[in-house]
Amino acid sequence: MMIPNPFRWRITLALLLSASIVYAQDGSRLDIGRFVVSGYGDVSYFETSDLATDGTNSNVQARFVPIFLFQLSEKIHIEAELEFSLDETGSTEVEMEYADLHYFLNNNTTITAGKFLLPFGQFGPNLHPSWINKLPTPPGLYGHGGNGAMVPLMPVLSDTGVNIRNVFKLGGSRLFTDFYVVSGPREESAETAEGGGHFLVKNADHDALFPTVELESAAGDNNGKMAVGGRVALAFLPQWEVGLSFYQGAYDHEGRLDYRAQALDMNWIGTYASVRGEWITTRTDFVDSEDGQVDVFERDGWYLQGSWQLRQLGRDWLNPVELVLRRSVITGVQGGKRWSFGVDYWLESSAALKLAYEQTTLDDGDKDTRLLAQLAFGF
Image (cartoon, rainbow, N blue to C red; front, side, top):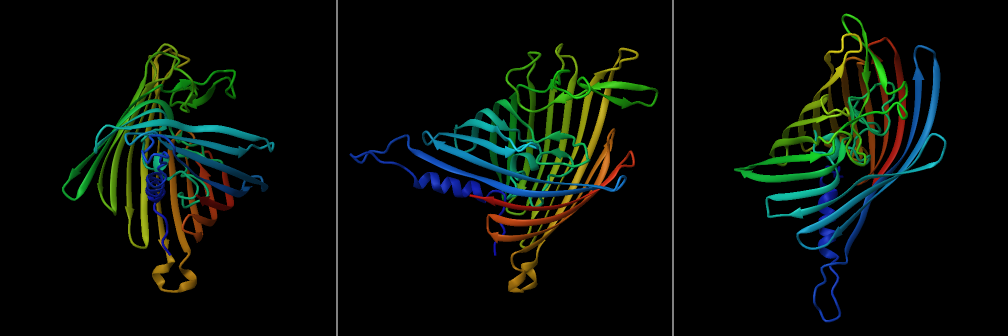
């Protein structure tokens, strides 16, 4: 059985688009009418045990995420993703994950405008859909789909702006470059943030209040300064890819305090196994409440994940089974470590039943464990 790679759905969609051309009665080809609905969904069960209090909580979550693709012409494609999910009270939440337009300038260059997933690292733009992610939860670095006790470094980044992607052939390899300008981060307001929009940071000399920073996309900008970023990756297809990413933007109303992030990511795909990981550093300027000077708040982290398909053993009943191991580490303020162990049973090439166990140890001494089950599907 073939386990899906993260890019198969894009190839499938491209074939569907090319096959869905509508012709007028006189035989002339129309420039509209090429429309495809794809997407994914999942049902997840979480059981969390707090080792300090022996308390246990359980929760069931469900999501349906349709992706709409429309080919306006050979050079212009439009795509949008909506997420329908249940909140803690059982109410339905609707969120627009992205909505953008791609203009294919030539065979090597694509210009994207709108709200899009930022090409920062590998997990956010390529791996976060639940049927592609090999575990029911994201790496501890990312806040997407439930992260338990570990405080992530960032969400899966999306924002509104313009991105230019280029692909260059270098012998048997490919060089990918993405550079974008987007609205950028904002300081979370006291009205929407718990604790008045600030949380306590313990410095070496004293305690200071650090403003929480919103990285999710929002309408407009709060300071007139756009954020810039990009990713440069070298790929030796179909096995290796290594990328470097950066992101920088002012988040305060005056435009003098910056949020900066860098990432190194790698991805290796073999016949029966895969290894991927990311290392991320974040630096956030803030004004020390005691001396009024600009200080820097630092948080770093990394994850490494390996998977192995048991079909290598040559037993038919093991063909659908895949084992997954992930290590996530965050250093600095609110740091912690997590082990994640998973077993995936692939019902189809785009549908999997995933069982996982996670153990998290925070630097402040808190610990928790989680048992997780998820049925994820792509269509």
